[in-house]
Image: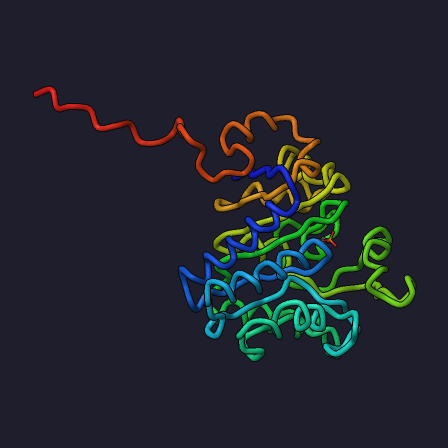
Length: 273
Ligand code: PGA
């Protein structure tokens, strides 16, 4: 696991947006796994700006979002469909037909979840999955005690998660009780994952995710099992980490490769025979 700790939130946000853009530059037909929530808003703002400046096209990109509220139609103002259209999809040249979120308005949730998994598989799997983290350690809407092998399914939200998301609704009691979410197993199938956490409110969850035991009580800890996992943090989100000096020495202030990288290949030595 790569742990990048940036001095400020805006540098952490820029790093994640640039990573997404780099993925699309590398592979024009990239399959992106996308996330919602307050933290991602600034990531999408930066991504839109950088895509314009660097003239990067998303015309061949496909995307799958982590989750959607169960019971909300795509045109509901607080749905994640609406969030994604307004904050990203309508601001870049991605084809709406190539974007997908679980549908919260289907009658058969299990069938919708099966179809979602099949659609990800048909697209060839996810190249890069963006993740936020809840204060309770959730990823997507995989609340504590979610199976670490879970696939896309309906989850009941915790009261804390409903409160955390109440600002997006007219009234707190309007936050739906359930959501459709990719499972932890679905997330772990992505070829690479990047998690962004900003602020001290996330520091306890971040510490458990990175340094705690792999446990269903902290779903994000399952990411320790992923072979290409990058945690992007600002200083406040990193304050609970025991090995913070180590992470900083490997990636000073979030630098991908520090000057004087001790693991750089040794300089070629002159032949002795
Ligand atoms: P937030 O949500 O960005 O609104 O804090 C993150 C999450 O719950 O995954």
